[in-house]
Amino acid sequence: MTVENKPREKGERFALDRQEQQLTGERWTTARGSWTIFPQLCKGCGLCIERCPTGVIRWSSEMGAYGTNRVTVEAAGCMTCKICADYCPDAAISVVVEAGLDKGR
Image 1 (cartoon, rainbow, N blue to C red):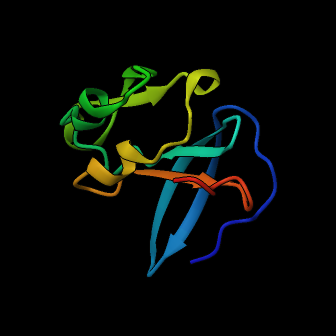
Image 2: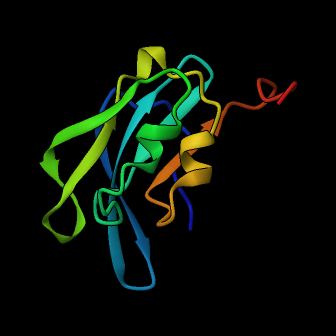
Image 3: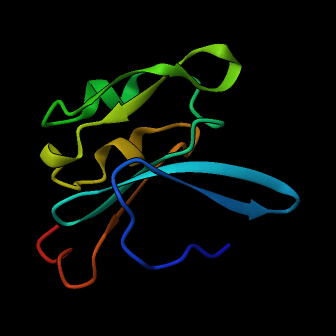
């Protein structure tokens, strides 16, 4: 599974092929890296919203998997701590810290 390592614009959609299944992700650039949601995987449990220390994850007006609400992020306030990705039971969120910026975590 490979993803291009180039900066993406806020909310840009991209495709990821994995064993004949195509996932579409929305990626936002944060101050320290990037935050990605895969709507096909988000079941709308809200664990990421509860655990976000900065409160920047919120419900989206768009639907995710199973016809449930999914989440989105206000990337300008995201500190790229990865807590949301750690608590997501369905791996619907990916947080990537740019090389050299993850020291101290």
